[in-house]
Structures are given as C-alpha cells and as structure tokens.
Amino acid sequence: MSTSTALLTDRYELTMLDAALRDGTAHRRCVFELFGRRLPGGRRFGVVAGTGRLLGLLRDFRFDEAELAFLRDHAVVSPETVRFLEGYRFSGTITGYREGELYFPGSPILTVEGSFAEAVILETLALSVLNHDSAIATAAARMSIAAGDRPLAEMGSRRAAERSAVAAARAAYIAGFSATSNLEAGREWGVPTMGTAAHAWTLLHDTEEDAFRSQIAALGTDTTLLVDTYDIREGVATAIRVAGTELGGVRLDSGDLPTVAASVRAQLDELGATGTKITVTSDLDEFAIAALAASPVDAYGVGTSVVTGSGSPTAGMVYKLVARQASDGSWVPVAKASASKASIGGRKTAFRTRSANGVATAEHVVVADGFEQPTAAVDRPDARALQVVLVQDGQTDAAYEGPAGVASAREHHLTVREELPIAALALSKADPALPTTYEDIEA
Image (cartoon, rainbow, N blue to C red):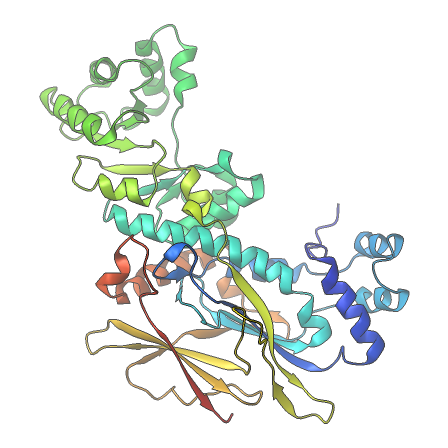
C-alpha cells in the first residue's frame, strides 16, 4: 500500500495547479502564510503543535503510481498535470514558529516559500495537521496550568479516530501532560505510557479482592487499584488489606470528586497508607481540574475533553498567499479584503517583546513590502525572535522530527509558557493575553 500523503488534500488544490500550468503562472515564486485570525473559544493564547508531524508528512508528499492512476481515472486534472506531478518534490523553504511555541491572532505560524505549483498544494495538509494538533495542545496547556505540579495523563484514545488519537497524545505531551495510555504514541513519538486496569478487570473476577490480588501479583504493590467498581469505601479497605500500606495508588472514576477524594484520603490515612496516591479520571476538563485544586488529589487522567480540544476541536487557522512575483519579476504583497476575513499582505517576521523581568508584553510582526525576510526588530533588546527554518531548499531539519523533536518541543513550550503574564493563565473567556502589533518596512 502506498505511503504517499499527496492525496490528503482537497481537489481544488490540484485544479488550481492544473489551471496555473495552463496559463503560465504555476512557476511564479510565491509566499504563503499560515496563521489564525482569532483564538478559538475566547482563549488567551494558543500553542503551536503538529510541526514535527507535518515535516514527516511533507517528506512523503509524492505522487506515486497509485495516486497518479486515481487522478487519471477520475479526470481530476489534465494529462499534462499528471506528468508534472510525477516528478513533484517540494524544493522551497519553510520557516515558522517552533513547535510548542505560543501564538496569538495574526502570528505568522508558518511561512511557505516556493513556486505557486509546489506551495499551493500543501495547504490542506498543513492546515489539517496544525489545526488539529494546535487545538489539542492549547486545551492541554490550559489543563496543565490548572493542574499545577500534579501530573496529567492523556487517556482519550477511544474518543478519537485511531490516528487522531496518536496525534492528540503527542500534542498533549508537548503541552504539559506527562504520559499517555496510547502505545503507538509511545512507540512512534517517545511519549511515556501508563495504564493498569479498567472496571472490566474487577468484574471478570468473582470478588473485588480476587481482582486486586491478581493485579498486585502481576504488577507489584506500586500499581494503582481502581476502587470504585462497587462501594468505594469497601474498595479502599480491600485494596489496603491486599496490598498493604505501601500501595502505590488508588483511582477514582465516579462520584462527586472533591467529596469522594477527601473521604478516601482520610480513610487511607486512617489505615496507615499515608503515601498511597489518589488519581481521578472522571470526565475531567480544565475547569474540573481547577475545581479540584484544593482537594487531596495527586494526579489526573483526562480523556474526551483533551482529544477534542475541550470544546474547540480546531484552531481555525488559514493558509493564504501574501506575496508573489509579478509578470515583470518584481515582488507584490497581496491580501484578501473580504469582510471579517481580511489578511495582511507581505512577508513577515515575528518577535515577542518582553519586560525587563522577562514577562511577554506583545507579539510584534514586521511586514516587508518585498520578498526578503525583514529584520528591523532583530536588534531590539526586549524582543525574542519566534521563527526558525524548518525546511531549506526542500530539505527538512531533522532536529524537529521524531521523538527527539517532541522532547525538544515540550521543553520549549514549558519554558516559553513562563513568559506569560498572570492574566493569561485564567480559564475564563477574554481577549488574547498579548496584543499583536505590526510594523511596515521596506525589505
């Protein structure tokens, strides 16, 4: 079966290419930009995720015989365009925000430079990856902030499509989660995995005690026992009777969690299991996690809400042409002027300004009227450059890919999150935490 990613796209990408090859504009040099006009759900910041995945998918963006046969058999494009696609390879340059970076409305998250022919057909792939993964990462970051120092585990695979589940686990880990239940995310991306037993395990056995004894025999006393299949108080008592006071943890998956957690903590302490930890996993989101801040909870497991973006399943990013070569070879900034959907033409460079004590104050975007990268703000002592080169002349930077890329993105995210002003950490709906300012210069 073909591993090509080239048909993970919309038909109009190829029909535009077909028409551009016919009229001679296909080889005009162009600059496309991926950005968000607004933050979904009234959130105060966004988190870039999916970049490393996109680079791998770009490497496989080839039209092999299976893809070409489909295009021919369904007359999607002309025979001449099919022949062009036989040799398609992206040979341009892509710069963008590092994975794990924060973004705001208007942030030039990804800048794709190349001919119209090779850059336009990347639109759908780039948006499908970054819109999904950034939505997950943004929700996960809010949950991570709400959890504070308490660890979070992602366990929502059964609430998402099978490949989306892997991508969601990856994005959640980048944004602050500590582990996932998804084994493929562990194998493919190096995300730590976790998991012990579900209610089916307890129901399989004749008694709850039999189930606990078997689990302890298999996994040791450091395991976590699920104590709410029947009566929670009896479950806790049985768990400690079986495992002893050195039991690693108990898990609660139902009930009024603040009340139940307090009761279980008191019972564990009375039984001498003062070191046994409490994990809760019942339909949590960032608001439920925040509500448990004062409760004696040691860890959280989050499923549905994180893999669906906690109410905002897409980041709402768009991919627009912002500069192109004219017929005389000069560079022209171009922009969409539609009501509520306007874009800003010109190639851009982005910086984040910070106060003397390192707190972010604004997203600063420098706009050139030509093609070359504008650098006017580079010497500002209060500014941090936000863009890196991801692809140079068609060659991807492997440092941003694979498990090493994920680890680097996670580290970067946790570092830059420290720059946020206190107001950005609130969960209520509000304007973006940082304003986006623009400066026009001649490149």
